[in-house]
Amino acid sequence: MILVTTTGKVGSEAARLLAKRSVPVRVLAHHPSKAAALAEAGVDVVEGDLDVPESIDVAMQGVSSVVLVSPAIPVQELNVIESALPADGSGVAGARHVVKITSKASPESPIARRRGQAQIENRLIASGLAYTLLRNNAYMQNFLMLAPAIASSGSFASPTGDGRIGMIDTRDVAAVAAEIAASPGPHAGKTYWPTGPERLSYADAARVLSNVLGRPARSFEQFVADYAAAFS
Ligand SMILES: NC(=O)c1ccc[n+]([C@@H]2O[C@H](COP(=O)([O-])OP(=O)(O)OC[C@H]3O[C@@H](n4cnc5c(N)ncnc54)[C@H](OP(=O)(O)O)[C@@H]3O)[C@@H](O)[C@H]2O)c1
Image (cartoon, rainbow, N blue to C red; front, side, top):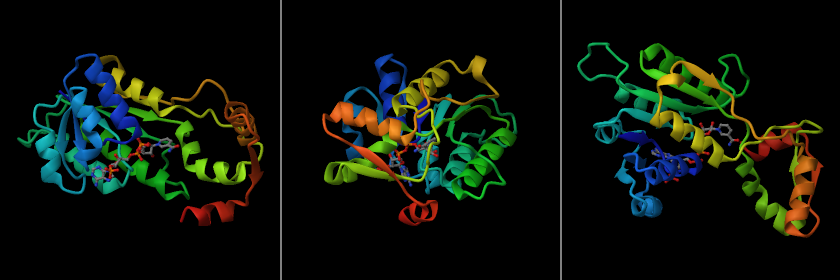
């Protein structure tokens, strides 16, 4: 049995792909009503809360591999790692493999998210569990958050200048995670850096959106401080 720890973009697609391959798969669902389609597809949906270790222990029963994906609040993912460890205190780990969805992780980073990811990664590596780290590049689906601005003004702001990013589709991240969780052996102890097929600036992305939408979309420059304030 493979446990996927959330029903968000990556988690729901990974679970769907595994169920399609008839691999036994379970999701821990914060809100099971959001996982009705997964249940219909044959996924075992178990209600749980990553802040409640007992609920993770219930979902962990009979599990051999875990796709660890969440909003990456360290205490929540550390709860999953503790739950995946052997309960007998033998310290003999290795029965379970954890595929950790992560990003650019660094303990020295000024960005809290990156420090948090490093904290989780380091605990996983030290735990003795088998693991694979997927340090994904930025998700293409982040553009969906800009959809209201594009719809109302035909434009969106970005602080990236001419910087180009190999954005990746979360469905590709999910496919990689599902494959590794199903056949983890060759991937144990490895770190991968999944990216999309080409590096695009936000101006490039605006051109793509203009073509697809059939009307102009443009990006405009935003100061980094204003961007940070919008997301704080
Ligand atoms: N965005 C990017 O560009 C990017 C790039 C690289 C890596 N990443 C990494 O990708 C991961 C996020 O993956 P994602 O985009 O698939 O996530 P997502 O779509 O934002 O979904 C988050 C999920 O977490 C669930 N959740 C929240 N609190 C919970 C709790 N207390 N207990 C159980 N479930 C809970 C939510 O359920 P409800 O909605 O029902 O509450 C939701 O299903 C993070 O590690 C992030 O750092 C992101």
